[in-house]
Image 1 (cartoon, one colour):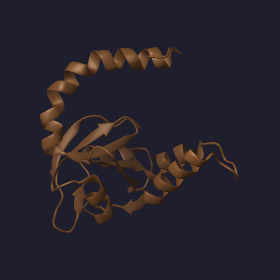
Image 2 (cartoon, helix red, strand yellow):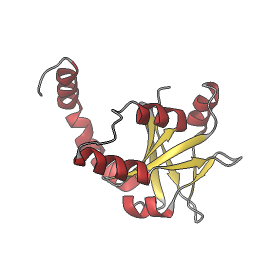
Image 3 (cartoon, rainbow, N blue to C red):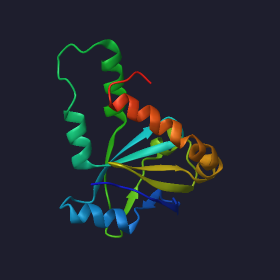
Image 4 (cartoon, rainbow, N blue to C red):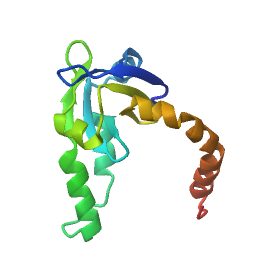
Length: 153
């Protein structure tokens, strides 16, 4: 499943976010339930993964009883903050207050399709940085391709 595009939305007073219909339809067409895993992320955003995607990616890591301390710290933080959220009958997700506070999000947000996930970002910050991010796109794409091909960019 590939999520793309962006939609301006408002988080209501009950901390609910209406998942845009196109993303709900993609999830439904893939045979998945309307269940997401929400992870707050530095940079004023929340990452929303379809539950099956989160489980697949989470299980892909190396399993050991004695992980390196940095791996153990990252896993405890990431998985400890991850919250399973079921959409209501109207397709809304009730976002955890703690996540909204950690991410520093207000009610005015943009939902961005980012490959295998959705990102909920501060709308003002997203719009203000768009020209710079757009200008950086060719250089970022070049570095990404270099890494993908085994380079050290």
